[in-house]
Amino acid sequence: MIQEPDHVNPTARIVAALLFRSKATVLQMRRAAREFSINEAKQAPCGDRLIGHPIIAESRTPLRTTDDDQETLFVSGKIQNLRVAIRKLNGVEVRAGDVFSFWKQLGRTSRRKGYVPGRELREGCLILTIGGGLCQLPNALYDAALQADLQIVERHAHSRVVPGSLAEIGRDATVFWNYVDLRFKSTHAFRIEAELTSDELIVRFRGEVGARSSLRRSTTPAVRHDNVNNCFTCEAQDCFRHIGPTPSRSYAGRTAYLVDEYWPEFDRYIAATKLAVDLLCIPVDGNRFGKVNYRWTTEGFETVKQNRLFVFQRSINSRRLASHGATRQRALLAANENLAQRYAAQLDYDVTHITTMQQFLPYLWRDGHLGGRTFDVLMTSLPLAILQSRLDKAVAMHPESTTLNDFRADRRIIEMETEALRHARTIITPHSEIAALYPYKSVLLDWCIPNQHVKRATCAGPTTNLVFPATTVGRKGAYELRAALRNLDVQITVNGPILEDTNFWDGFRIERTAPGVDWLSDATVVVLPAVVEHQPRRLLEAVARGVPVIASKACGLGRMEGVVEIDSGDIESLRYEIENVLLRSVQDERARLAR
Image (tube, rainbow, N blue to C red; front, side, top):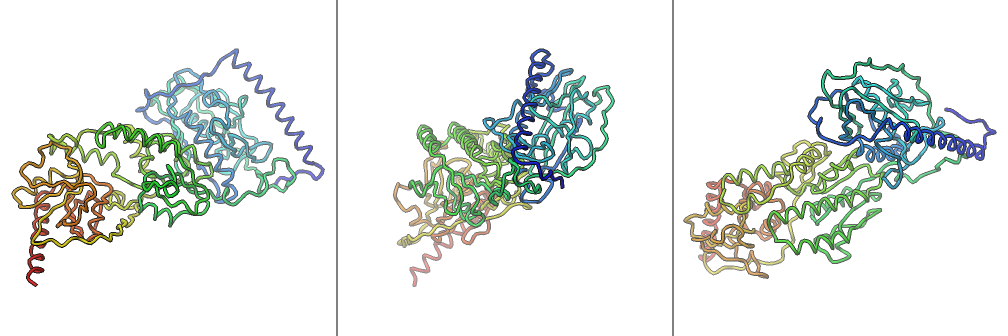
């Protein structure tokens, strides 16, 4: 451990720091004047011309090198600064002969740009400064530049070696705005890609194979391993930079829960897993403001952040749209992106884990907010790639449908969600079909069966009333149900409007459920052979009331008592199960009347 002499007092340390700042300012002004006159390096633009080229260099470095909780105070700030910085680097394409400059690309670090206090090596100690910790990025860039045989124009080694860094093998590059820079160039164009996983910084260069600089790779001898102090290991308690004791929360990190409309299954899960220090981000406190669709449990969180203005705006926009259709779906995606960005702005840098609803996932991933963090996903629907593939198959089966092909998400959103789901730590859902897609990392929750106090009416005589508890659209299995019911003497009760052809149910005995009427009062069976069904609330109501349910596996109920599952599109099995239920119902009713 490096200790300062007893005679060095806090005033002397302040004077030394002021002297350092004065020298740095002079050097910064000198570099700025030189840049103005020479203009050697320019900010490189992002592009996609080289996106398909081979990887010519890759550098991977760990984000954390110790499990010490105290180090988390330094490391969490560093990771947040890396999140902000790589947005300026990822996708940058440098033309042949141009000089890449780290500071030209990033600009000066400041709180306004999203940078926070992170660890910086200064005068032999790790201290907290705005933008601190960014040196891991130029370290990785320098390492990749050496691998790719690029020409190093400017590079400065660290004065001390931080354990676990590339400085241990002499592949480090320190930076200090703006006069200590990292610069390199190539005789051929190259692309920089940078990303954060939950535990690594990855920097890749793409370019033409075999078209590297003709210069020989520069080599740097390994540097000795030095002891580096920080505010927890240094015994100089009277140093003006000493931060003193900090609440334990800042060391251990915390979880942020990002949710939207209420799901009782997820509310129960969050209540069982949250800690008192955690953060809950919600649209609005539904319990306080009487919004049953946002009635999340808010007790027990250190911080609850609301977005009331967003809820107001979304409500107004929703009233202007039709209840179904492509326009509404696009509006929902735009609203999800808007709320995701609001939530991201509310994340403190000490949030080390995120549990997010699925609809925010593509945008959090795209903007880098999940980098350097672990994250779980509350799955509310099939992954977009699978969902749209399934709908495409349904369109091929029923090309006459007016609803099956009315919307598809943008390809880029699908790609982002797919990549994010691949990196997610855990998939959490009550939907059995979705959970089965991720057998090694899913948590299958129990569906919440609603409390039902309404008794079913006793019908006079045998009844064969089949309830289709959905709007008549292709994705709910309307075509399959219609085919299965051909030539069956059955009364069909339809919940919701008929959005397919207005003559869709011609030839069948159809009733529409009137508003305010108990839709299960005389139901013999509830049938939903859906192609897609993510939130089968009406089926759960039927189960709670003891009404038999026939549902496709796409409804996600699994082996629930009172439910018969069939494969989506299996019309023969659907008809067989319907006939069985109707026959049992008639037999039971006759037996009851005979008693």
